Image (cartoon, rainbow, N blue to C red; front, side):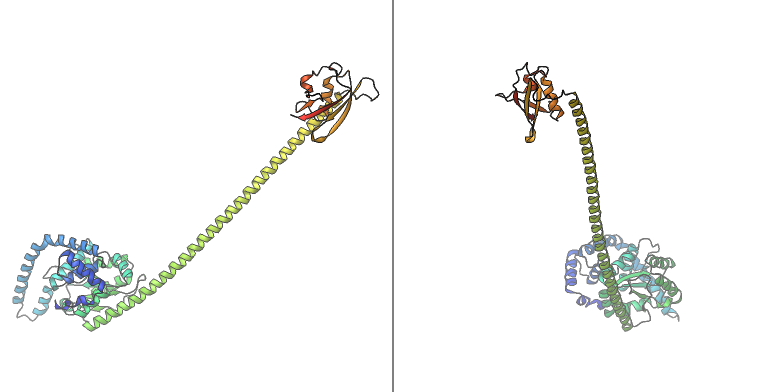
Length: 438
């Protein structure tokens, strides 16, 4: 149709470049179909080229059957015109039959939504000679893309039982200004409710995405406003279960439709900005909360580590104190035992002779740490008596060596027998013994 002659002038420079590249890649001159495919793919070239390939595979298999169906439908249409030419109700009957002359917009059995919308798009083009950029996919995906692209969803709901359907679509929806608005500002989501099952399916789709007011409105509208289809129903709010806004219907003029669409687009963008701002604020609050939680956890971990370290240090300190205490107790016990043993040895030691007693020897002991001691011994006493004296003073022969003043010095306990007397070994009257720790 001529209404699409200037559509590309409303595209951005980037969209025009993508459109040109897409048409070169798929070898097509159909700008309208190309724009529709790109719009359905959110202007992503790879996805659009892939979708175009899928459409061609399906269309190649059905082209011959469609041509035969079109010829038969045209014959039937001509027969109906002749049959009702003189009848007062000819116009109404002819209008109703023409709306289905190219087949139903939705297949009788509605299973996959993607396939149903593809069928809608194909039948729409056969009826009106042009394509609109219908979104093909799940409603939930359309809502997500709507938020991301900042374009509201516009539900394009048709009913072939409405007499005004063809006139409204061809004269209003497909007018240049309305088409431009639909293409640039909306995600167009089509649905046909001619069949009651299809109506119920759309109601269910609305319920699944929490558009409860939309589902209630559609059921009521379908029962009371049949002749007002097609219906252009915008989704202008991003919150859950929004109210139904102002919508366009078959009784509206081009200017009225454009005014309602522009209002819906502005309302959506404002709501989406507000929603985005709230979401951004929520994300910022969540980030602050997360940072605070991380800081708290880090601080808690440091405190726990510090407390654990203090507890471990206290434990180690206590263990060290207990060890030292045991060592001191053991040392004290050994000391007491040694003192007791030394006392016993001292008791067994013969008494020291008087200085004027005949046959007395004088021995000077040079002890460790610079200490000195002197004692007298009888010449008849044995070397063992000398060892017992030193043992009683804490210098046991097990831990100390005794050297005399000879040169070189002799180890008394090695060079002499303990049983030998001082006279036997010719011990000098005055002698020095050097006591050294082993």
